[in-house]
Image (cartoon, rainbow over all chains, first blue to last red):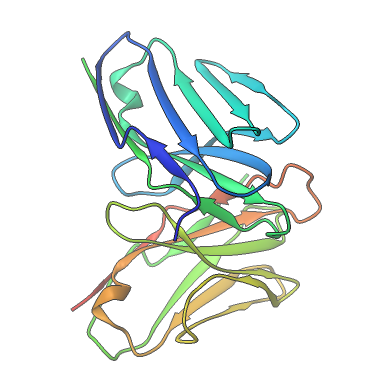
Length: 112
Length: 114
């Protein structure tokens, strides 16, 4: 079973709009990571946020973490057609020894 | 700086056969993890190798086994293949001493069991 659940499962937006994806998880974590996957290929690491951090930025990406609600969000600003992909959150649980637990992913489509 | 590499890219097997998948970690990394990703789902953790030993294991049967070599590369073996083993198999590497523990993934091996 998967710990995380992404919401929404699918998202379709126009180029230039912002995309927000949410992730909820069940157990206490060391960190939470977001990955992108294009067309069933390998996962590309986007950003890692530690349990003692609340917000992190990387280029057009903004990630927030609320450990009291066991949730995280990924915001992609000014989206581009090249951002079309599946996005996954993955948690590194306390005591899990760097074993990542993934959610089911959000499939983002950015229309030109 | 070479990233994580996996071979082969694609593989077709029949039920009951055995398969071996290979992974070379990112330069400087010492830990290799394997994940199975069924179509339309998120990856699921199979096991992790460090210092040539299985360090962690997910909820997978003993038909799934692995190995890590002194050069940190790794193999995933699956015996008695079932149709349900059809999936994308992903290898990820990391550095156990790194505080952030970011895992870097390879392109995957697509296994089809007929």
